[in-house]
Length: 139
Length: 139
DNA sequence: GGTTAAATGCAACTTTCTTGCGGTAAGATA
DNA sequence: TATCTTACCGCAAGAAAGTTGCATTTAACC
Ligand SMILES: [Mn+2]
Ligand SMILES: [Mn+2]
Ligand SMILES: [Zn+2]
Ligand SMILES: [Zn+2]
Image (cartoon, rainbow over all chains, first blue to last red; front, top):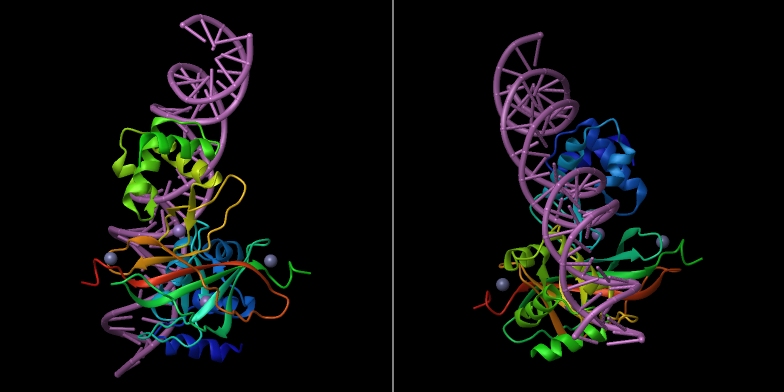
């Protein structure tokens, strides 16, 4: 993605354009997979740990990233498709490879299964995490 | 649940019967909801923190508990229905209340939605977390 | 260029979880 | 029931993950 587009992307999400944010956003775009804080820390040693944490938080707050549920003990983030500062909607599934551990966003829209909840419960949305083998580990 | 049944439950899962394990297992049975390490630490101040951690791990290892994915930063565990030392199968959904934060296991069997995965991906199982209002918070 | 509010870097700190080890107790065996 | 073996427990220390406070720097605006 072009420098000017990245910049525009940040501005549309009401975020100031800084080196760290540009680099982190570009990295998410290129990697096409979910990234953890650890991933960023390894990749961007020129930035302070705290700055990277705050970058993740501001991105999440302003609709550039979403947190993906998992049981690994550390948070994992994925790029939002069409979220803005006001509206967060993550109507897509996630895939986690049981072999290499990579998490990816599945872009095919979620076909909400008819869930039969117990009485008096009210559903607002759901997270679906598919576990299995990714295209690399499956071959 | 009776003392003798709890004891039998531990033995069936190849775990030695100790005070801590009996108390923790009973607590899970009574609460009928998912519990975090913090919950246990608050409840069982007579046991060492490390012992509680190791209790959770041994229970998970031997099919008494399963970890439930979430983005809270700390692990949450739920009772297994019919897992043994060898076979872990968690074919049920989870409900997380967005108001009180309580997580519960939904016992109605999962009707696996026909997920259309990208080519070359292979699904083994899936986690479904439903977010919404629990019966207490919905009234 | 000058002003202002936000972002950064550094240090310190909290929370969450793990590891090592000596002492203790559960379960097995006789 | 006494003895043995091995798993479990408590304590201390440490590692990993994430947060907070504050002085300095810089992006955005005029
Ligand atoms: Mn996603
Ligand atoms: Mn469950
Ligand atoms: Zn893989
Ligand atoms: Zn609730």
